[in-house]
Length: 228
Image 1 (tube, rainbow, N blue to C red):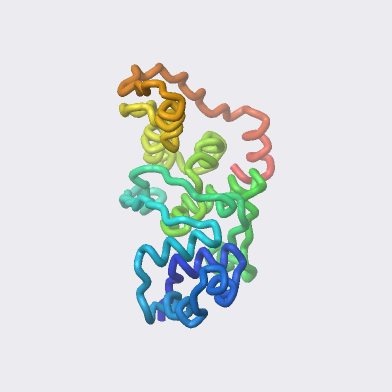
Image 2 (spheres, rainbow, N blue to C red; image 1 turned 90 degrees about the vertical axis):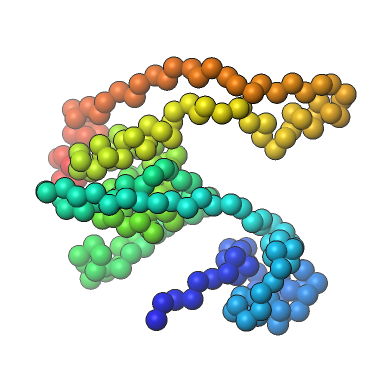
């Protein structure tokens, strides 16, 4: 039987470290209502969900769906490639992750501390080469991945297939510059100045990322230590 998927209310409450009784008291509602919402016995309205999340400093957000495509290689077999990169919110992107020992051919549970760059690199290598789609989406942050991309010890065929996704994430976007939080629109209105946003901006050429140096101290260390 599959494990019950936690509701957004329960996820936020547990992440905040509150009990159902505490959340009910802060939101001026009944603990029994919180329990029914979290067990899916009762469906709260969107307004109720937003109110419950607000009292514990959370908010609903739109999360893009990440699609993966299967690829075949005669040497390494099947591997997957995402259509685009994604973000993993803090603190999860720097948290600890664990997998059952059977997945790493061990009798002990394997744990990586993603706040340690060397362990984060090791984990990213493992999860990408093992085609763990759900694990990737929940634990591999796109920005952190790009920072260590040239240091990952992954098969060349997988690197080549992922490279356009990496390049697309760093390319200049053909869209109007954003006004984060509509701050400039608000402040100009407050001081009585006309706000004239720029609708298009000519993309600036990007400096190419230098290729990996197999003789760099880091890669030499990886080979000597049996990591590469």
